[in-house]
Length: 360
Image (cartoon, rainbow, N blue to C red; front, side, top):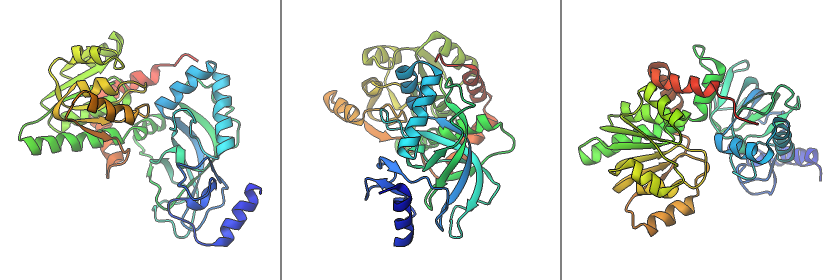
């Protein structure tokens, strides 16, 4: 049965689901993120919004995997096109992750609860792994050498999707980068404040990957929340120099986050909260060793193996709370933008990241 027939049958069958179940083509009965294939038809159901896509922002873990697997920019571009064409969404089959997008609202269904209007320029705050997506220009303007992908196409937002109107005082590329990681600082803020309330003293906080976008925002959020000591763990001396220049941490150390022993030696005294903002696999045990009993580890990396984290904590007899970074906390987008506007150190890191061109 063709996609068009499936779509027609679904439309005849009844009302759409606010979770996007009506867009699932294969297998049926699962949520869009679990689905192998979605229907990206740009005709909206009554509670949907159709977006003319201008740019994708691939998540760091997904782009790293694509770059390592396909080497050249042309091969990376072909791989992304193939994924979107086959799946009706951008979900890297190796990492399971996607990213988010920027675009202009084309059409709003009469029952959409999102409060968007035709012509609004927006960034989606939900993953591309559950967003029906079509690419119509073959990614002709993208050379495959960066996470941000200029493109033309359409995307679909459901009744329970989340989007933010783009700010007028920040460049689109910067706003998109901030929105892509805006869940990290908001949850860091919440955890640090909660620890302070529980213990009556402010916690010491370690951020693995403190020289990255989510890491720099998490350091700034922890400082804003009153952390008594901030430690950034970065992989190279160049990143250490960047974080020191930005003034985001009280202490910056260089260690391979994939080496538990190296992390433990670099951190020294264990901390109360560890935030993992790296885009490589194998950092779970180091984060656990860095955290004192009664502390909390927050995993924001899409490269995290949660079985490895849980079993690692058990094997190390570590009495630590393990949190999965949800990516959504009420007010997270506005909070992240405010940090970028008011914290010069964050802007320093983001600017340095924008100047870097990955090898492809």
